[in-house]
Length: 132
Image 1 (cartoon, one colour):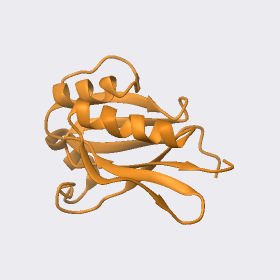
Image 2: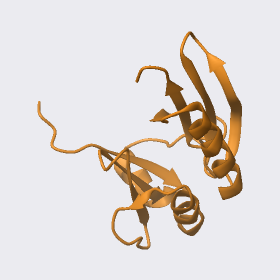
Image 3: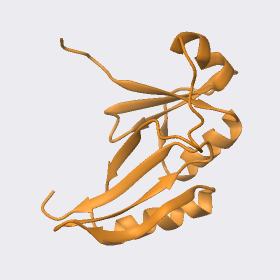
């Protein structure tokens, strides 16, 4: 198997709010939002994340979609270039309307990071690893 691209499809309740949140964090838009989805490039354009309105995504999922506020679905990990950048991301996330799930902290031998949730509860881990 040799996939040419990879993208994630996540359910959201408010496309305008989602578009504003990720734009404020500096994610690069992948095209123009439409009535069913907004889309962004992540990680230097190596991953595309589509945010579909829940009702538009559900038929293609062939099953229930969890409420990310109350259940975990996936945690995306975003790498930072320094501890200071981790702290800056935490501030930016809060200012954009995200929720800090766990504040920036040292964990393991060489890791520093935090976990946040976007307005729809999708979780991201931002971390800096010495030597990466």
